[in-house]
Length: 230
Image 1 (tube, rainbow, N blue to C red):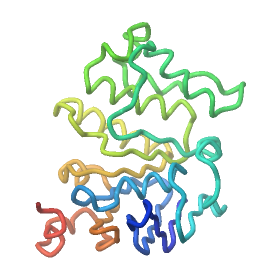
Image 2 (cartoon, rainbow, N blue to C red):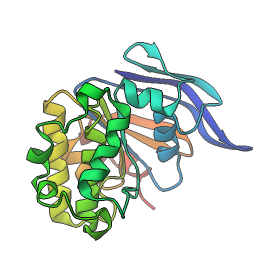
Image 3 (cartoon, rainbow, N blue to C red):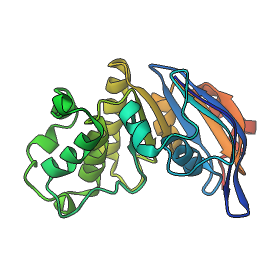
């Protein structure tokens, strides 16, 4: 579904991505792991169009997306859940969800029927302000907002960061259900057990490069874990 080929990305003179190539298969959960500052979030931002590549190509469903704007990628079916959630604290839960309508056609401006099956707590809080929700509830809201555009590919940046264990289990269950519904998922994560539990494939990054690709079981290998220890 998604191919990144020989990607390089600069911030001024600093090289954040170095010859990165990955392939994201449809109907799978792919997890990108690595220590802080190795380029994981930069890779996601290049995929969703927030930062242009200096070199390389991005293809989505066979179409070249390298120079497309972020809103074009959203309209094509790439949903994004940013690190830190970035919900609108003064808008209600319903209004936060409706923000996603800007990326879909008028006849699709309704909430997907499975949305509140995945996150029933949001239905009970539709008229509460986003800033009044707990961190875990805000994370569920951020994921639900991305689902409003009915994405083919859902991209998440550290969805378990700062979340209590019970909500992490809810998020894991929701992502597996979304995959089973035919939504392809790509996420950056540092919580190894979370990735081991839900991922179909993993990539590990170090110093802006892909240094390992394999099944989640390979996380138990000593040579692989060296890239993840602080």
